[in-house]
Length: 116
Image 1 (cartoon, rainbow, N blue to C red):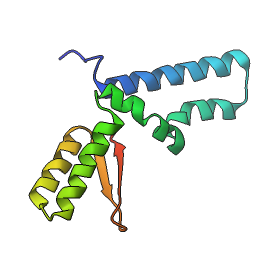
Image 2 (tube, rainbow, N blue to C red):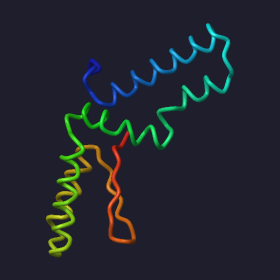
Image 3 (cartoon, one colour):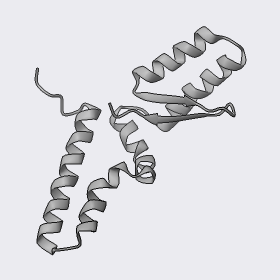
């Protein structure tokens, strides 16, 4: 089976490889500090940058933040109505879309794009 270059996971892997190669070139050519190489290499894994890159990952998945927020609001409404079947169906749909949903103890919801 041939890899699909439009697959979001493939795009993330390609982006990571490009960042790694670019970081190596910058480190080798400029002779800059080892810490700059580490920073550039690890930048996608930093929480703030991962949060800022969320829209980019969603776009690669043909989704928007509004799409996800709408589904989460629908799920919250279903839970408030004690319609557990509908709430579970929406959560399953979010999981299929690659969105991890975490319910907080205070009743709020956090979500992130799964990378696996």
